Image (cartoon, rainbow, N blue to C red; front, side, top):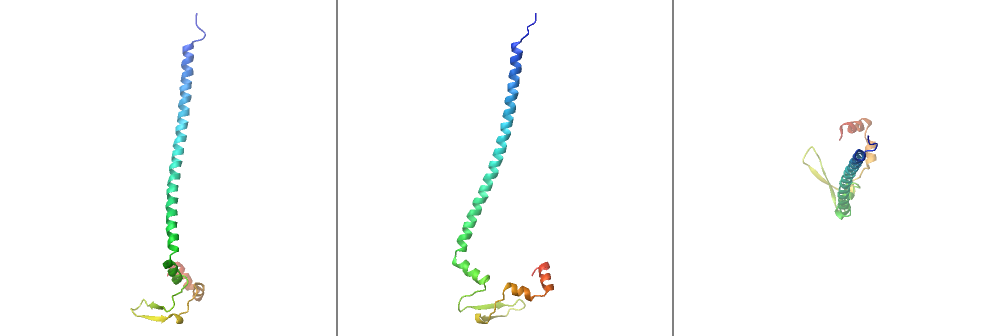
Length: 130
């Protein structure tokens, strides 16, 4: 007579299915862990970059508040000078230079300067630079 129900075979198959199920879960969790670790590394790099940018911006703010920067900006961008100073103009062709009193200098606005150029001069400067 043959047994209808074999407990050892059933236990073997249930154990095998359980082991395969646990392997699938472990594989899935390992993949998620790898993705999370990669994302964490990317965010840490981004944090380090932003911290260096913050530090650099802090240095710039400190520099922009200095009197020497404000003086340089007033001279370069606004064309201003301190009382009693003279402007020195150096010609490229020769080594001659001369002083012009500040009262004799008429500063020309950038828009006025651009408007005084011909159309072809503006195109030449645009295409080939100054």
